[in-house]
Image (cartoon, rainbow, N blue to C red):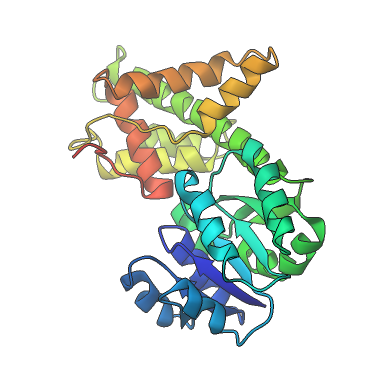
Length: 302
């Protein structure tokens, strides 16, 4: 299918590449030109401006897949709506707040086009492993872009349509909140191994054993084990851990609905405290795991 990918960061560049290398017609767009030039090497066409990206398909409706931060998504959608033909499809593949998606969908519908919100998971490994794609919004538009989703989910990812506007971002939001709690549990456990009564335990070896069909076998544990094998003392990592909004939104929703979430709340509080200087081996490991799956900065303030 024909698709514009706008926002060629850590995940957007992989989406553009994976689609282009699998017989989709991709136009790559980004504010800076270097990622576009890189996308050309993998079979995409260049859209150095939004206008060029739309014109590259020679007229008619287009699909625009946007991979940009939540704080700028509305202005980006507004810009695209000024130039895309009626009947186009706008996809927000970032981590936007689900409560705002209904308004976005109505605005895009009023302009004669359709909106699909897609929570995208897979980190910097999505190109190799396949992405996990959680979709909401216009169901007809979802069916139109389904060939792209099938490609992006290969070989071991998956995708599903969850319902009306916001459903995709809602499922991804909760996914990320769960991720916070799982990572915190792993980090705390490895800290106990390190600071407990047995000196010089091989933490990477423990993680490797745990990864062999134990009940904590997981990709996150694998990444923790790899980080510890590469840097057993986690040297050069400040221990500050960023929070990107999704767990905060989940906790706010849970409070509105009187749903206790003690584990996720605790993991969220640890991240906030780390930003105030309360760091330790566990928060350093959290930062290392985030770097492994998402390419996030090991030392955000440096």
